[in-house]
Image 1 (cartoon, one colour):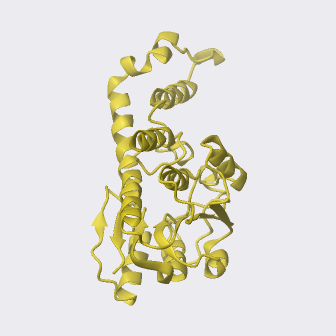
Image 2 (cartoon, one colour; image 1 turned 180 degrees about the vertical axis):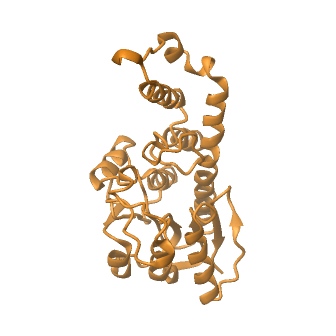
Length: 280
């Protein structure tokens, strides 16, 4: 039953169960963009909308396949994915793998994700603790809850992903907390750290970490997380980098940090962008 629950939780967080509805949204969005003469409303076919998977099998397959690895068929950053996480199944299963290893080998420490969007990964972390009846670990949910910061480093200048430019990446604390409630996983084992990483993480009251997941995109954000928290990761604990393959600035920060701190643990690929390593 534990395995079935966690599989269902992953499907729900990834919105795999209602994937057709995402395709319906894309269909309606496309129709609304159509140019109609004399201001007539665009024509929407009920049959096409109702039987969207059968009518557009190639598009559905592209959507389903992309969901496995966190790739999106829509290029508009405001409408990347209608789910509680955009990381895809492979990266979510990597979180599960790391947690299973932590539990099996009794690696001490809490779990944290820095950069949580709608909170889906942290919700999954809490779900894993729940099914294993683990009550002595905390899930830390760290985010500005106001989107990405303005770039402060020259290498981050091309990444103008702050709230004014990309409001879709800004999700409020209240929204994330409500998402936890929907899965009945909001309790005292979940703690929220609100604010910019440079302000909150150096003094956050985390004593020890078994899992550190970094999803900050920017060089600056990635560097701030690793600088503040890496020393708290237990030997045998895991570090996961979400944007390593997708964002060159993130990759550069990770490489520089590993070189500076003489980290030789192998870097393992997860999918086209995610990587992880186990601390020696």
